[in-house]
Image (tube, rainbow, N blue to C red; front, side, top):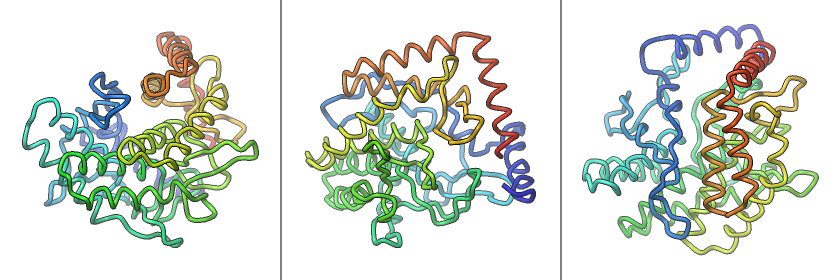
Length: 326
């Protein structure tokens, strides 16, 4: 990252972390809460509650679609991942209370996802981010993400289940296309030298295998399989679960979890929020698959989180990484 980019990054990030007004972090950094009312076998409530996201204070556009305020030169932007999570939170709220307003908000998100599904250069249907993003190297707009595809699909299949409207399922089918193509073909899949299948949150070279984004992407494939019974979705889900099982030890530092496989001399330690999210996600993965390895690492990482010394060590590593690479 050059000097100008670094200046713009800190100009954006410091007010977000230290300022009193809402920022994009206000939306992202809720408390990861496992939804004990979700189902392994039926397409019901989403696996995390997202109820705090459903109560997002804004800003919103005139149609009630949430915008994220990134501060600095980026300002307010539509983020398809955030929009989908807001929709899923409102779906959960509606299912629990029967509140018609929550249902209306959920379906408004589903309609937005239908309207904003667009073709990429390979002709595949994606939800693009239409703003540049600093991720050590730049992600230039428009850029796609397995996480956006996953959570958009999770909204649409539930909207179809709720309303019976075929357009929602048809758009979910189109959004599933990138899961069937590797990155070099315009998709979101990377198959590594060992044959492991990764669903990439950020499309960069070499791929970095962001852990939370990968797991969320797996859930979207699972939801699509529950909705359709598609054998391809089942194979992708099973291959992705094997990849997670084969590689989870690589994310364990012995005192904290890694955010990604950065490929840098200093590894990118997860923030306290993402470490807690990893724990919640692994407990959900155990719920969905009954793989005891996922429960083992969830418990192990929970023990790290409870140790003041390990929390401090992780924070020092995180700060050093940010100073060196951002």
